Image 1 (cartoon, chains in turn blue, red):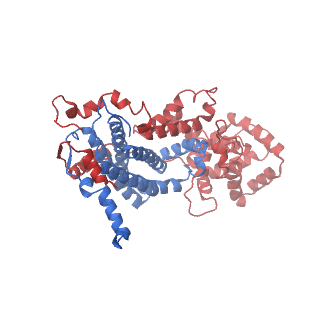
Image 2 (cartoon, one colour):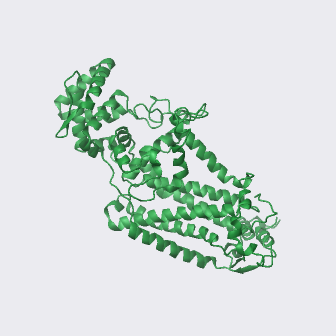
Image 3 (cartoon, helix red, strand yellow):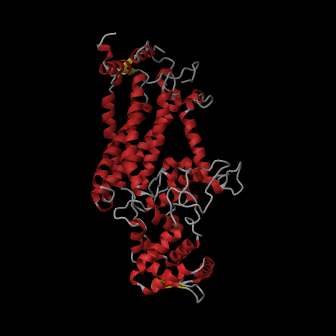
Length: 206
Length: 327
């Protein structure tokens, strides 16, 4: 074995080249059957997430009180709010689309499973956002949600009445988690490419 | 090792490929979704109903405030009898041997009577002789005597009258309770209790556990929520003030609270309204895991083949005279 082949850098580059060459990461051609609007739900979900992050960064920069007292702040909160609504609408459409396309076939089960995890973590992220609003909705949701969290023992570590904890999770840890998972999901999609149409005689196994 | 690139090439072998601009599609999506969100933000804005303060509560419904504070002292409020993670006064929810509320112990200790009533009064008593005497009498009394005073005062409160924001009950043997509650109400109405419960001996503070628990014990905030159609029987947490959509993605979670066995006192297999929160969390966890494992669950993974929605999605592929090459 040569000295060069012991290079971790070279090995990493070769592994990336093998698993995800650039023409698969950014292909300029797709199978002819990739012509349905259903394929658009994935990319518009990513676009909505981008607007969620951009509006969220502005809100985080000026702090949690800002948007209650500033018209500009209220606008960015509204942009954040509606981007989140669109994100969930598109994500659910994407999920149903992939279900009816049986998108997990031919080695794509992990892609599907990561997608479900993104859905679950997104719900948690939105939930902490609702708890971080510092308004009546946040109070009511916190008081009611605590019982569910406490009943499952989660409340002992995830205190929905603790604004600081919810805000920190909402603007930092959970968005980073969602973003990393989405990047992983996209890489997995691009690594294997889009799934073929369902063969009436074929299997539905992953 | 076979490369993934080669695998994809093999997978598509024989399939006609056509030009497709992913980057252009992404930029168009960013513009389109951004425009939609922008228009919605400009036209529809977003909800922001001001939070309720303890001062609002004490000013708007002083009898409810005093009744709640009395219940805190008597150990009869929701938070005083809650159990873990706040205290050990209640058993918490369980389902057979599954009792996670108990397992993790009292990690967020809250002594409601002391935290919400006695300690704020002690701080307020430094320049108030009557209150100081009242607190001294309260703390010097036996538990039996305290319980008698609380019982008598609690029975008198439903008939209390309010004059200029002060609560008055019929004459009776309530010990120092009228003085204590009158002072607590005064501190709360002036906004002092909002600060005292949050600061809790510190300067910087972001934890609202105590004031939220206290307000949750009362009926004022719950009444406002009911007026705003936010309460549990109307799908609870997915609702939002005004006509905004709220957390619609929680529809399945909140739906379970509307149906048996979670609405029933007798229930099914030990699941009922008394442990509905735990039962529904377990159920939703199982459903989420099942969703993730759909690719491995026969029948669930076969439904897409039986319901021919895929024929609409890939209409071109399944057309009788569609493209020539099939995989």
